[in-house]
Length: 565
Image (cartoon, rainbow, N blue to C red; front, side):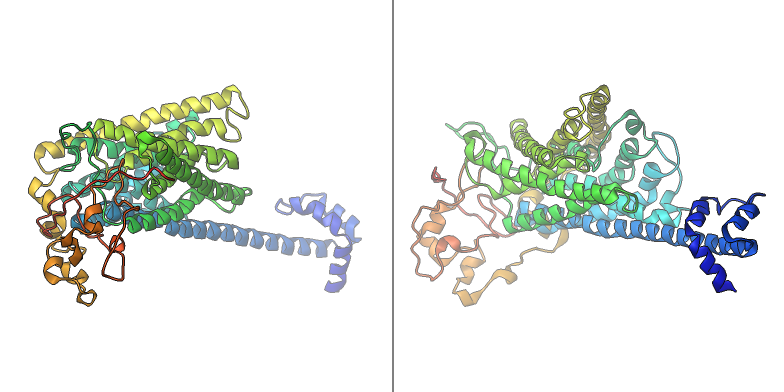
Protein backbone atom coordinates (compact mmCIF):
# COMPACT_ATOMS: atom_id res chain seq x y z
CA UNK A 1 0.00 0.00 0.00
CA UNK A 2 2.80 2.44 0.98
CA UNK A 3 4.82 1.52 -2.12
CA UNK A 4 1.84 2.18 -4.37
CA UNK A 5 1.35 5.59 -2.79
CA UNK A 6 5.00 6.44 -3.28
CA UNK A 7 4.71 5.31 -6.89
CA UNK A 8 1.78 7.62 -7.42
CA UNK A 9 3.67 10.49 -5.81
CA UNK A 10 6.68 9.94 -8.05
CA UNK A 11 4.41 10.17 -11.07
CA UNK A 12 3.27 13.60 -9.85
CA UNK A 13 6.76 14.88 -8.80
CA UNK A 14 6.41 18.10 -10.76
CA UNK A 15 3.37 19.05 -8.67
CA UNK A 16 5.18 18.24 -5.44
CA UNK A 17 8.22 20.35 -6.40
CA UNK A 18 5.89 23.26 -7.03
CA UNK A 19 4.64 22.91 -3.45
CA UNK A 20 8.05 22.42 -1.77
CA UNK A 21 8.28 26.10 -0.93
CA UNK A 22 5.11 25.73 1.14
CA UNK A 23 6.24 22.71 3.15
CA UNK A 24 7.53 24.79 6.02
CA UNK A 25 4.22 26.66 6.24
CA UNK A 26 1.23 25.38 8.24
CA UNK A 27 -1.18 23.39 6.11
CA UNK A 28 -4.00 25.71 5.01
CA UNK A 29 -7.63 24.80 4.32
CA UNK A 30 -6.93 24.31 0.60
CA UNK A 31 -4.15 21.78 1.12
CA UNK A 32 -6.57 18.87 1.42
CA UNK A 33 -8.33 19.88 -1.80
CA UNK A 34 -5.03 20.16 -3.72
CA UNK A 35 -3.89 16.80 -2.34
CA UNK A 36 -7.02 15.09 -3.50
CA UNK A 37 -6.51 16.54 -6.95
CA UNK A 38 -2.94 15.28 -7.11
CA UNK A 39 -3.35 11.70 -5.93
CA UNK A 40 -7.03 11.17 -6.10
CA UNK A 41 -8.06 10.59 -2.53
CA UNK A 42 -4.75 9.73 -0.87
CA UNK A 43 -4.78 12.88 1.25
CA UNK A 44 -3.42 11.22 4.39
CA UNK A 45 -0.59 9.58 2.47
CA UNK A 46 0.42 12.90 0.87
CA UNK A 47 0.46 14.60 4.28
CA UNK A 48 2.65 11.83 5.65
CA UNK A 49 5.00 12.09 2.70
CA UNK A 50 5.14 15.89 2.98
CA UNK A 51 6.07 15.64 6.65
CA UNK A 52 8.82 13.10 5.91
CA UNK A 53 10.10 15.20 3.03
CA UNK A 54 10.11 18.33 5.20
CA UNK A 55 12.10 16.49 7.88
CA UNK A 56 14.59 15.37 5.22
CA UNK A 57 14.94 18.91 3.93
CA UNK A 58 15.58 20.21 7.43
CA UNK A 59 18.18 17.50 8.01
CA UNK A 60 19.90 18.37 4.73
CA UNK A 61 19.81 22.04 5.67
CA UNK A 62 21.46 21.37 9.02
CA UNK A 63 24.07 19.12 7.43
CA UNK A 64 24.81 21.69 4.72
CA UNK A 65 25.20 24.44 7.31
CA UNK A 66 27.57 22.25 9.34
CA UNK A 67 29.61 21.46 6.23
CA UNK A 68 29.82 25.15 5.36
CA UNK A 69 30.91 25.98 8.89
CA UNK A 70 33.51 23.20 8.89
CA UNK A 71 34.75 24.28 5.46
CA UNK A 72 35.26 27.85 6.67
CA UNK A 73 36.98 26.65 9.84
CA UNK A 74 39.30 24.42 7.83
CA UNK A 75 39.95 27.29 5.41
CA UNK A 76 40.92 29.64 8.24
CA UNK A 77 43.09 27.17 10.14
CA UNK A 78 44.94 25.90 7.06
CA UNK A 79 45.65 29.31 5.56
CA UNK A 80 46.56 30.73 8.96
CA UNK A 81 49.18 28.02 9.34
CA UNK A 82 50.51 28.97 5.91
CA UNK A 83 50.45 32.65 6.89
CA UNK A 84 52.57 31.84 9.93
CA UNK A 85 55.34 30.97 7.46
CA UNK A 86 55.71 34.75 7.13
CA UNK A 87 56.98 34.81 10.71
CA UNK A 88 59.61 32.26 9.76
CA UNK A 89 60.47 34.29 6.67
CA UNK A 90 60.90 37.50 8.62
CA UNK A 91 63.11 35.69 11.13
CA UNK A 92 65.40 34.23 8.46
CA UNK A 93 65.67 37.53 6.60
CA UNK A 94 66.49 39.48 9.75
CA UNK A 95 69.04 36.88 10.86
CA UNK A 96 70.73 36.98 7.47
CA UNK A 97 70.85 40.79 7.42
CA UNK A 98 72.58 41.24 10.79
CA UNK A 99 76.17 40.44 11.71
CA UNK A 100 77.20 37.17 13.30
CA UNK A 101 77.69 38.77 16.71
CA UNK A 102 73.93 39.58 16.94
CA UNK A 103 72.44 36.48 15.32
CA UNK A 104 71.07 34.91 18.50
CA UNK A 105 69.71 38.25 19.65
CA UNK A 106 67.69 38.99 16.51
CA UNK A 107 66.44 35.39 16.35
CA UNK A 108 65.22 35.66 19.92
CA UNK A 109 63.49 38.97 19.20
CA UNK A 110 61.84 37.68 16.01
CA UNK A 111 60.40 34.79 18.02
CA UNK A 112 59.37 36.99 20.93
CA UNK A 113 57.30 39.07 18.51
CA UNK A 114 55.14 36.05 17.75
CA UNK A 115 54.59 35.04 21.38
CA UNK A 116 54.04 38.53 22.77
CA UNK A 117 51.78 39.39 19.83
CA UNK A 118 49.62 36.31 20.34
CA UNK A 119 49.15 36.90 24.05
CA UNK A 120 48.43 40.62 23.75
CA UNK A 121 45.96 40.07 20.91
CA UNK A 122 44.27 37.30 22.89
CA UNK A 123 43.94 39.53 25.95
CA UNK A 124 43.02 42.85 24.34
CA UNK A 125 43.34 42.97 20.57
CA UNK A 126 40.44 40.82 19.43
CA UNK A 127 38.00 42.55 21.74
CA UNK A 128 39.06 45.97 20.44
CA UNK A 129 39.03 44.96 16.78
CA UNK A 130 36.17 42.53 16.24
CA UNK A 131 33.74 42.42 19.17
CA UNK A 132 30.51 44.36 19.56
CA UNK A 133 30.98 48.07 20.15
CA UNK A 134 30.91 51.27 18.14
CA UNK A 135 32.66 52.38 14.95
CA UNK A 136 35.91 53.08 16.82
CA UNK A 137 36.39 50.33 19.40
CA UNK A 138 34.86 47.11 20.70
CA UNK A 139 34.61 46.06 24.35
CA UNK A 140 33.47 42.43 24.55
CA UNK A 141 35.24 39.04 24.63
CA UNK A 142 38.38 40.13 26.47
CA UNK A 143 40.75 37.14 26.46
CA UNK A 144 38.14 35.39 24.25
CA UNK A 145 35.69 35.31 27.17
CA UNK A 146 32.25 34.10 26.04
CA UNK A 147 33.44 34.03 22.44
CA UNK A 148 31.17 31.73 20.37
CA UNK A 149 32.98 28.57 19.23
CA UNK A 150 32.32 29.33 15.57
CA UNK A 151 34.38 32.54 15.92
CA UNK A 152 37.55 30.88 17.13
CA UNK A 153 38.97 30.05 13.70
CA UNK A 154 38.62 33.64 12.50
CA UNK A 155 40.09 34.93 15.77
CA UNK A 156 43.05 32.60 15.27
CA UNK A 157 43.62 34.04 11.81
CA UNK A 158 43.43 37.64 13.02
CA UNK A 159 45.86 36.81 15.84
CA UNK A 160 48.55 35.68 13.40
CA UNK A 161 47.82 38.67 11.17
CA UNK A 162 48.70 41.12 13.92
CA UNK A 163 52.20 39.72 14.47
CA UNK A 164 53.40 41.42 11.29
CA UNK A 165 53.12 44.88 12.82
CA UNK A 166 55.62 44.18 15.59
CA UNK A 167 57.95 41.95 13.54
CA UNK A 168 58.75 44.61 10.94
CA UNK A 169 59.68 47.08 13.68
CA UNK A 170 62.11 44.60 15.23
CA UNK A 171 64.10 44.45 12.00
CA UNK A 172 64.33 48.22 11.68
CA UNK A 173 65.96 48.60 15.12
CA UNK A 174 68.09 45.46 14.94
CA UNK A 175 71.55 45.30 16.54
CA UNK A 176 71.02 48.20 18.96
CA UNK A 177 67.62 48.01 20.68
CA UNK A 178 67.57 46.90 24.29
CA UNK A 179 65.72 43.62 24.77
CA UNK A 180 63.09 44.74 27.36
CA UNK A 181 61.80 47.34 24.90
CA UNK A 182 60.57 44.54 22.65
CA UNK A 183 58.08 43.49 25.29
CA UNK A 184 56.84 47.07 25.63
CA UNK A 185 56.25 47.95 22.00
CA UNK A 186 55.19 44.41 21.07
CA UNK A 187 52.39 44.48 23.63
CA UNK A 188 51.20 47.98 22.78
CA UNK A 189 51.28 47.62 18.99
CA UNK A 190 49.79 44.11 18.85
CA UNK A 191 47.27 44.56 21.65
CA UNK A 192 46.02 48.10 21.14
CA UNK A 193 47.33 50.20 18.23
CA UNK A 194 46.92 47.75 15.34
CA UNK A 195 43.58 46.25 16.54
CA UNK A 196 41.96 49.69 16.73
CA UNK A 197 43.19 50.57 13.23
CA UNK A 198 42.00 47.27 11.79
CA UNK A 199 38.55 47.85 13.28
CA UNK A 200 38.24 51.20 11.53
CA UNK A 201 39.11 49.73 8.13
CA UNK A 202 37.78 46.15 8.21
CA UNK A 203 35.01 45.80 10.77
CA UNK A 204 31.54 46.10 9.22
CA UNK A 205 30.74 49.12 11.35
CA UNK A 206 34.21 50.71 11.23
CA UNK A 207 34.12 54.40 10.40
CA UNK A 208 36.72 54.21 7.61
CA UNK A 209 35.03 51.24 5.97
CA UNK A 210 31.62 52.90 6.11
CA UNK A 211 33.07 55.93 4.31
CA UNK A 212 34.31 53.73 1.46
CA UNK A 213 37.88 52.84 2.46
CA UNK A 214 38.98 49.65 0.68
CA UNK A 215 42.04 47.59 1.63
CA UNK A 216 41.40 43.92 0.98
CA UNK A 217 44.62 42.36 2.28
CA UNK A 218 46.27 45.12 4.30
CA UNK A 219 48.54 47.26 2.10
CA UNK A 220 47.67 50.16 4.36
CA UNK A 221 46.33 48.69 7.59
CA UNK A 222 49.16 46.18 7.98
CA UNK A 223 52.15 47.15 5.85
CA UNK A 224 51.93 50.94 5.84
CA UNK A 225 51.25 51.01 9.56
CA UNK A 226 54.14 48.70 10.47
CA UNK A 227 56.48 50.49 8.05
CA UNK A 228 55.61 53.87 9.57
CA UNK A 229 56.22 52.47 13.06
CA UNK A 230 59.58 51.12 11.87
CA UNK A 231 60.59 54.53 10.51
CA UNK A 232 59.71 56.34 13.74
CA UNK A 233 61.53 53.75 15.85
CA UNK A 234 64.67 53.76 13.68
CA UNK A 235 64.75 57.57 13.67
CA UNK A 236 64.49 57.90 17.44
CA UNK A 237 66.97 55.16 18.32
CA UNK A 238 69.54 56.38 15.78
CA UNK A 239 71.84 54.47 13.39
CA UNK A 240 74.24 51.69 14.29
CA UNK A 241 77.79 52.66 15.14
CA UNK A 242 79.70 53.29 11.92
CA UNK A 243 76.65 53.34 9.67
CA UNK A 244 76.83 57.06 8.84
CA UNK A 245 80.35 58.11 9.78
CA UNK A 246 81.61 61.47 8.47
CA UNK A 247 83.10 61.13 4.96
CA UNK A 248 86.84 60.80 4.53
CA UNK A 249 88.87 63.53 2.88
CA UNK A 250 88.13 63.74 -0.82
CA UNK A 251 85.03 61.50 -0.62
CA UNK A 252 81.44 62.50 -1.16
CA UNK A 253 79.08 62.09 1.80
CA UNK A 254 77.50 58.64 1.80
CA UNK A 255 76.24 55.98 4.13
CA UNK A 256 78.52 53.07 4.91
CA UNK A 257 76.55 49.91 4.25
CA UNK A 258 76.99 47.27 6.96
CA UNK A 259 76.53 43.86 5.32
CA UNK A 260 74.67 41.01 6.91
CA UNK A 261 76.38 37.70 7.41
CA UNK A 262 74.26 35.27 5.37
CA UNK A 263 72.66 35.98 2.03
CA UNK A 264 71.40 32.35 1.82
CA UNK A 265 69.36 32.96 4.97
CA UNK A 266 67.92 36.07 3.35
CA UNK A 267 66.97 34.08 0.27
CA UNK A 268 65.33 31.34 2.32
CA UNK A 269 63.43 33.95 4.31
CA UNK A 270 62.22 35.66 1.15
CA UNK A 271 60.88 32.40 -0.27
CA UNK A 272 59.08 31.68 3.01
CA UNK A 273 57.62 35.19 2.92
CA UNK A 274 56.29 34.63 -0.60
CA UNK A 275 54.73 31.34 0.50
CA UNK A 276 53.20 32.99 3.58
CA UNK A 277 51.90 35.92 1.54
CA UNK A 278 49.89 33.55 -0.64
CA UNK A 279 48.02 32.34 2.44
CA UNK A 280 47.93 35.86 3.88
CA UNK A 281 45.93 37.27 0.96
CA UNK A 282 43.94 34.12 0.21
CA UNK A 283 42.58 34.11 3.77
CA UNK A 284 41.56 37.77 3.58
CA UNK A 285 38.30 36.74 1.89
CA UNK A 286 37.26 35.43 5.35
CA UNK A 287 35.02 32.74 3.81
CA UNK A 288 35.11 29.85 1.35
CA UNK A 289 31.51 28.63 1.54
CA UNK A 290 29.64 31.41 -0.24
CA UNK A 291 29.08 31.61 -4.00
CA UNK A 292 32.05 33.30 -5.66
CA UNK A 293 34.45 32.86 -2.74
CA UNK A 294 36.64 30.40 -4.61
CA UNK A 295 37.09 32.82 -7.51
CA UNK A 296 38.11 35.63 -5.16
CA UNK A 297 40.63 33.40 -3.38
CA UNK A 298 42.07 32.37 -6.74
CA UNK A 299 42.39 35.98 -7.88
CA UNK A 300 44.04 36.98 -4.60
CA UNK A 301 46.61 34.17 -4.74
CA UNK A 302 47.48 34.56 -8.41
CA UNK A 303 47.75 38.35 -8.23
CA UNK A 304 50.01 38.10 -5.19
CA UNK A 305 52.54 36.06 -7.15
CA UNK A 306 52.27 38.37 -10.16
CA UNK A 307 52.83 41.39 -7.94
CA UNK A 308 55.92 39.75 -6.41
CA UNK A 309 57.29 39.03 -9.87
CA UNK A 310 56.75 42.60 -11.09
CA UNK A 311 58.31 44.12 -7.99
CA UNK A 312 61.32 41.79 -8.00
CA UNK A 313 62.32 42.33 -11.61
CA UNK A 314 61.68 46.07 -11.48
CA UNK A 315 63.92 46.54 -8.44
CA UNK A 316 66.59 44.28 -9.98
CA UNK A 317 66.74 46.18 -13.30
CA UNK A 318 66.56 49.63 -11.72
CA UNK A 319 69.44 48.76 -9.42
CA UNK A 320 71.50 47.46 -12.35
CA UNK A 321 70.90 50.02 -15.08
CA UNK A 322 70.54 53.26 -13.13
CA UNK A 323 74.09 54.16 -12.05
CA UNK A 324 73.05 56.32 -9.11
CA UNK A 325 71.16 53.34 -7.63
CA UNK A 326 73.93 50.77 -7.57
CA UNK A 327 74.78 49.68 -11.14
CA UNK A 328 75.09 45.97 -10.27
CA UNK A 329 72.95 42.85 -10.17
CA UNK A 330 71.80 42.58 -6.56
CA UNK A 331 70.04 39.50 -5.23
CA UNK A 332 69.12 41.31 -2.02
CA UNK A 333 67.53 44.16 -3.95
CA UNK A 334 65.55 41.68 -6.04
CA UNK A 335 64.02 39.78 -3.11
CA UNK A 336 63.23 43.02 -1.28
CA UNK A 337 61.52 44.26 -4.43
CA UNK A 338 59.44 41.07 -4.49
CA UNK A 339 58.27 41.65 -0.91
CA UNK A 340 57.50 45.30 -1.74
CA UNK A 341 55.45 44.16 -4.74
CA UNK A 342 53.43 41.83 -2.51
CA UNK A 343 52.90 44.58 0.06
CA UNK A 344 51.56 46.77 -2.75
CA UNK A 345 49.25 44.13 -4.23
CA UNK A 346 47.41 43.42 -0.96
CA UNK A 347 44.97 46.33 -1.26
CA UNK A 348 43.27 45.13 -4.44
CA UNK A 349 44.45 41.57 -5.07
CA UNK A 350 40.89 40.21 -4.93
CA UNK A 351 39.62 42.10 -7.98
CA UNK A 352 42.58 43.21 -10.08
CA UNK A 353 43.05 42.07 -13.67
CA UNK A 354 46.29 40.15 -14.05
CA UNK A 355 48.00 42.92 -16.03
CA UNK A 356 47.07 45.42 -13.31
CA UNK A 357 48.57 43.13 -10.67
CA UNK A 358 51.89 43.17 -12.53
CA UNK A 359 51.67 46.96 -12.87
CA UNK A 360 51.06 47.45 -9.15
CA UNK A 361 53.97 45.12 -8.42
CA UNK A 362 56.14 47.31 -10.64
CA UNK A 363 54.99 50.40 -8.74
CA UNK A 364 55.83 48.63 -5.48
CA UNK A 365 59.36 47.86 -6.73
CA UNK A 366 59.89 51.48 -7.77
CA UNK A 367 58.55 52.72 -4.44
CA UNK A 368 60.97 50.42 -2.61
CA UNK A 369 64.00 51.77 -4.50
CA UNK A 370 62.90 55.37 -3.89
CA UNK A 371 62.22 54.68 -0.21
CA UNK A 372 65.64 53.09 0.26
CA UNK A 373 67.34 56.13 -1.21
CA UNK A 374 65.24 58.41 0.97
CA UNK A 375 66.46 56.64 4.09
CA UNK A 376 70.06 57.11 2.92
CA UNK A 377 69.50 60.84 2.45
CA UNK A 378 67.85 61.17 5.85
CA UNK A 379 70.55 58.97 7.44
CA UNK A 380 67.99 56.64 8.98
CA UNK A 381 69.43 53.19 9.58
CA UNK A 382 66.97 50.41 8.74
CA UNK A 383 68.96 47.16 8.36
CA UNK A 384 66.08 45.24 6.76
CA UNK A 385 64.62 48.12 4.69
CA UNK A 386 61.31 47.71 6.52
CA UNK A 387 60.20 51.27 5.78
CA UNK A 388 61.12 51.13 2.09
CA UNK A 389 59.50 47.72 1.58
CA UNK A 390 56.35 47.88 3.65
CA UNK A 391 55.48 51.55 3.98
CA UNK A 392 56.48 52.68 0.50
CA UNK A 393 55.22 49.51 -1.19
CA UNK A 394 51.99 49.54 0.81
CA UNK A 395 51.38 53.22 0.03
CA UNK A 396 51.87 52.62 -3.69
CA UNK A 397 49.34 49.76 -3.61
CA UNK A 398 46.78 51.52 -1.43
CA UNK A 399 46.63 54.58 -3.71
CA UNK A 400 46.84 52.74 -7.05
CA UNK A 401 44.22 50.05 -6.31
CA UNK A 402 41.20 52.45 -6.62
CA UNK A 403 42.30 53.14 -10.21
CA UNK A 404 42.97 49.58 -11.37
CA UNK A 405 40.40 47.31 -9.69
CA UNK A 406 37.53 46.21 -11.89
CA UNK A 407 35.14 48.71 -10.33
CA UNK A 408 37.80 51.42 -10.15
CA UNK A 409 38.34 54.79 -11.78
CA UNK A 410 40.03 53.40 -14.90
CA UNK A 411 37.08 51.12 -15.69
CA UNK A 412 34.07 53.00 -14.31
CA UNK A 413 35.21 56.62 -14.22
CA UNK A 414 32.24 57.66 -12.11
CA UNK A 415 31.87 59.61 -8.88
CA UNK A 416 31.64 56.47 -6.73
CA UNK A 417 35.02 55.18 -7.91
CA UNK A 418 36.54 58.62 -7.35
CA UNK A 419 35.19 58.64 -3.80
CA UNK A 420 36.98 55.33 -3.25
CA UNK A 421 40.31 56.93 -4.10
CA UNK A 422 39.58 59.84 -1.77
CA UNK A 423 38.73 57.46 1.07
CA UNK A 424 41.95 55.49 0.54
CA UNK A 425 43.92 58.74 0.53
CA UNK A 426 42.26 59.73 3.80
CA UNK A 427 42.99 56.27 5.15
CA UNK A 428 46.69 56.65 4.31
CA UNK A 429 46.83 59.91 6.26
CA UNK A 430 45.02 58.31 9.21
CA UNK A 431 47.41 55.34 9.21
CA UNK A 432 50.50 57.58 9.26
CA UNK A 433 49.11 59.76 12.03
CA UNK A 434 48.06 56.75 14.10
CA UNK A 435 51.54 55.19 13.83
CA UNK A 436 53.21 58.46 14.88
CA UNK A 437 50.76 59.00 17.75
CA UNK A 438 51.65 55.63 19.22
CA UNK A 439 55.35 55.24 18.39
CA UNK A 440 56.72 58.74 18.82
CA UNK A 441 55.88 59.11 22.54
CA UNK A 442 56.52 55.42 23.26
CA UNK A 443 60.06 55.31 21.88
CA UNK A 444 60.82 58.86 23.03
CA UNK A 445 59.92 57.93 26.61
CA UNK A 446 62.03 54.77 26.43
CA UNK A 447 64.95 56.83 25.16
CA UNK A 448 64.46 59.50 27.85
CA UNK A 449 64.41 56.84 30.55
CA UNK A 450 67.66 55.46 29.13
CA UNK A 451 66.55 51.91 28.35
CA UNK A 452 66.01 52.17 24.60
CA UNK A 453 69.51 51.47 23.30
CA UNK A 454 72.30 49.18 24.45
CA UNK A 455 75.69 50.70 25.47
CA UNK A 456 78.21 51.38 22.71
CA UNK A 457 80.65 48.82 24.09
CA UNK A 458 78.05 46.07 23.87
CA UNK A 459 77.02 47.19 20.41
CA UNK A 460 80.60 46.89 19.15
CA UNK A 461 81.18 43.55 20.87
CA UNK A 462 77.80 42.08 19.94
CA UNK A 463 74.87 41.04 22.08
CA UNK A 464 75.07 37.28 21.63
CA UNK A 465 77.92 36.81 24.09
CA UNK A 466 77.10 39.64 26.49
CA UNK A 467 73.32 39.25 26.78
CA UNK A 468 72.58 35.64 25.87
CA UNK A 469 75.78 33.65 26.42
CA UNK A 470 74.82 31.77 23.25
CA UNK A 471 76.97 32.36 20.20
CA UNK A 472 75.25 31.46 16.95
CA UNK A 473 78.59 30.40 15.47
CA UNK A 474 80.87 29.25 18.32
CA UNK A 475 84.50 28.75 17.39
CA UNK A 476 84.30 25.03 18.13
CA UNK A 477 81.67 24.64 15.42
CA UNK A 478 83.73 25.99 12.54
CA UNK A 479 87.27 24.86 13.40
CA UNK A 480 87.90 22.09 10.87
CA UNK A 481 91.39 20.65 11.14
CA UNK A 482 90.79 18.17 8.35
CA UNK A 483 91.01 20.99 5.80
CA UNK A 484 94.50 21.89 6.93
CA UNK A 485 93.61 25.24 8.44
CA UNK A 486 95.93 26.71 11.01
CA UNK A 487 94.24 26.63 14.42
CA UNK A 488 96.03 29.74 15.52
CA UNK A 489 94.87 31.68 12.48
CA UNK A 490 91.35 30.30 12.80
CA UNK A 491 91.16 31.48 16.37
CA UNK A 492 91.87 35.05 15.33
CA UNK A 493 90.49 35.94 11.95
CA UNK A 494 89.08 32.84 10.22
CA UNK A 495 91.20 33.19 7.12
CA UNK A 496 92.95 30.43 5.11
CA UNK A 497 96.69 30.16 5.74
CA UNK A 498 97.64 31.67 2.40
CA UNK A 499 95.75 34.87 3.31
CA UNK A 500 98.85 35.99 5.22
CA UNK A 501 100.75 35.99 1.93
CA UNK A 502 98.30 38.50 0.42
CA UNK A 503 96.66 36.16 -2.04
CA UNK A 504 93.66 37.32 -4.14
CA UNK A 505 91.24 36.35 -1.34
CA UNK A 506 92.83 38.93 0.97
CA UNK A 507 93.36 41.48 -1.79
CA UNK A 508 89.79 41.42 -3.01
CA UNK A 509 87.92 41.66 0.30
CA UNK A 510 86.18 45.00 0.58
CA UNK A 511 83.71 46.77 2.76
CA UNK A 512 80.45 46.26 0.92
CA UNK A 513 78.68 49.38 -0.31
CA UNK A 514 75.74 49.78 -2.64
CA UNK A 515 78.08 51.37 -5.22
CA UNK A 516 80.91 48.81 -5.13
CA UNK A 517 81.65 45.10 -5.48
CA UNK A 518 82.56 42.75 -2.67
CA UNK A 519 84.84 40.66 -4.88
CA UNK A 520 86.43 41.44 -8.24
CA UNK A 521 85.38 38.43 -10.26
CA UNK A 522 87.91 39.22 -13.01
CA UNK A 523 90.94 38.72 -10.74
CA UNK A 524 93.02 35.60 -11.02
CA UNK A 525 93.00 33.31 -8.03
CA UNK A 526 96.03 30.99 -7.97
CA UNK A 527 96.01 28.72 -4.99
CA UNK A 528 97.89 25.71 -3.82
CA UNK A 529 94.62 24.35 -2.48
CA UNK A 530 92.30 22.43 -4.78
CA UNK A 531 89.50 24.87 -3.95
CA UNK A 532 89.85 28.41 -5.45
CA UNK A 533 90.59 30.94 -2.74
CA UNK A 534 87.76 33.21 -3.85
CA UNK A 535 85.23 30.45 -3.20
CA UNK A 536 86.21 29.71 0.39
CA UNK A 537 83.68 30.57 3.04
CA UNK A 538 84.13 33.87 4.86
CA UNK A 539 80.54 34.00 6.08
CA UNK A 540 81.50 34.47 9.72
CA UNK A 541 83.57 37.58 9.10
CA UNK A 542 82.45 40.97 10.33
CA UNK A 543 84.17 42.77 7.46
CA UNK A 544 85.81 46.09 8.16
CA UNK A 545 85.11 46.28 11.91
CA UNK A 546 86.77 45.24 15.13
CA UNK A 547 84.74 42.67 17.02
CA UNK A 548 86.12 42.15 20.52
CA UNK A 549 83.83 39.17 21.06
CA UNK A 550 85.36 37.19 18.20
CA UNK A 551 88.63 39.14 17.76
CA UNK A 552 87.98 39.61 14.06
CA UNK A 553 89.66 42.48 12.23
CA UNK A 554 90.14 42.22 8.49
CA UNK A 555 91.71 45.00 6.42
CA UNK A 556 89.83 45.84 3.26
CA UNK A 557 90.73 47.15 -0.16
CA UNK A 558 88.35 48.34 -2.84
CA UNK A 559 88.58 47.53 -6.51
CA UNK A 560 86.56 49.12 -9.25
CA UNK A 561 83.97 46.70 -10.59
CA UNK A 562 83.64 45.69 -14.19
CA UNK A 563 80.89 47.48 -16.15
CA UNK A 564 80.08 44.39 -18.21
CA UNK A 565 76.61 42.90 -17.92
